[in-house]
Length: 538
Image (cartoon, rainbow, N blue to C red):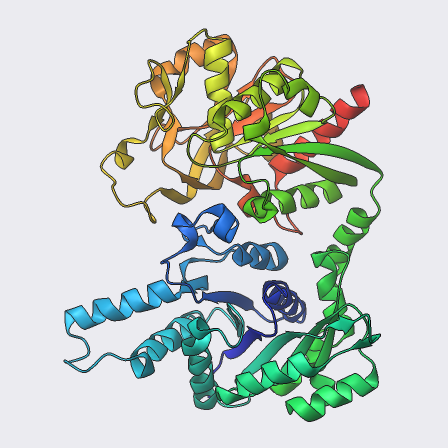
C-alpha cells in the first residue's frame, strides 16, 4: 500500500477557473490538520519551461530556490503553504517528451517503438510520484493544466486513470473543478456544461470523486442533487466555490464547504485537528480592515497583463496587511513615460517600484521614473532590471557619465555601468541559462537593508544575465550610491541604496518570490512603511 496519498485536480467547461487556488486552499487546510502536503503543476504546452515565454503569453515566470523557471501557480502554492517548491513541482509536456526521447537515444527502450502509451504516460506517472517517494509528504496534490477536452491534456488524463487504478481508491482521488454558469435571462443556474465536462472526463476513463463548482450564486439542494445524479458523484462531494472577494478567502470558504473532510474520508485518513487558520485570518482581518492607504506606482513594460507581475502584486498585499494599509496599485507603462510628462503621471504616488523585464523597449521611461523618485525623495524600490535602471540614471545624471547604459541595451556604450556576467558571455541558448535560484548576499551593517533584514547574511532568488560593472564601484560609492549588498563568492553587487534619500533601494534579485501570507517579505514591508510615512509627510 502506498504511504503517500495522491490528489489530482482537473478543470472543465472553461479555463482560468482557479485550479491553482483551489489546490492551494485544500493543501492549506490539510496542512492545518497536521499533514505534510505539496502541490505540483503539470503543464500541457511543449515548451521545456516558461523561462523563454513572453510575459504577455504566460504571465510571470516564477523562480524556485533551486533555480527552476516555473508556472506562476507555484507562487500561489508557496504563498499559501509557506514552504518552498522545487524543480520537480512543475513539469511540462516539453520536458516529458525531451526525457523520453533522450532515453530512446540512449537505447533504454531496447529498440521498441516509442509511443504515447506506455512511454509518455509512464514518464508522467514517474514525475507525479517523485515527490511522494521522497518520504517528505503525506499528500501530493497534482494540478493538471488546461481544460478537459484539450488534445494536449489527454496523455495526462490517461496517466491519472492508470495511477488511480494502480494506487487504489484509498490512495488516490480526482477532483474536477467546473463552472455552473448563471443565465440572467432565465434567472437560473445551469448544470449542463458541467454534466458534459464530467462525461468527457469519464470517456477518458477517469470518474471524478469530488466536484468543485465555481459559481456566482449559491447552489441549492436541488442543484447539488441533480449534479450528483448525472455526474455519478456523491451529493456530499459536490462542493460550492462561490466567487470570493479575494483569493485569500478561499481556504475559509473550502473549510465551510468541508472539502478537507470529504477528501480525508475518501482517502481513509484520520481527520486530525480542526483547522483554526488563526494566523491566516489575522492577515485577512488586517487586509480587509486597513487603517490607512497608499498609492504605489508599478512602472513596467507588460502592465497590460497584471499577471506579468503577479508576485510583486501579492507581496504588496502581504506587506500592506502587515502595515494595516490598503495598497492601491497604479500601473504605469514605461513606454508612455517621457521627461516631459513624468511629473504629471507620477506626482500623486506615495511610492515607486520599477519592475523587472528584458530588452530595450520602454527603458528610457523607466530611467525617467527613477530620476523622478530620486529627485523628489519618493520611496523607491528597483527590482532586477529596475535596480539596473537606477544605476544607469545615477551614472548619467549624478556622475556625469553621458550616455551610460547597459550592454543589454547598447553594446557600443562608452560607459557600460551594467555589464554581461562573465559566465554568460559564451552562452548561446536562452532557456534555463541565466543566473537562477537562491544566492547568498552579505549586507553592510551601516545600511538600510541591514536594518530591514536584521541579518548580515541573506539568501534571495535571482533571474538575470547582466550585473553591476565593478569597474565603476568606487565612483558610485564616493558619489553617494552605496553598494550595500555583495555576493562574497562572485563579488557581484546585489543591492544599491542612496545615502541622501529617505528610502531608495535597488536589488538585483527578486524579493517578491519569497513573500508569503505568513511571512511577508521584509523589504516590501519596509517599503510600504516608508511610502506611508512619505504620504503623511506631504
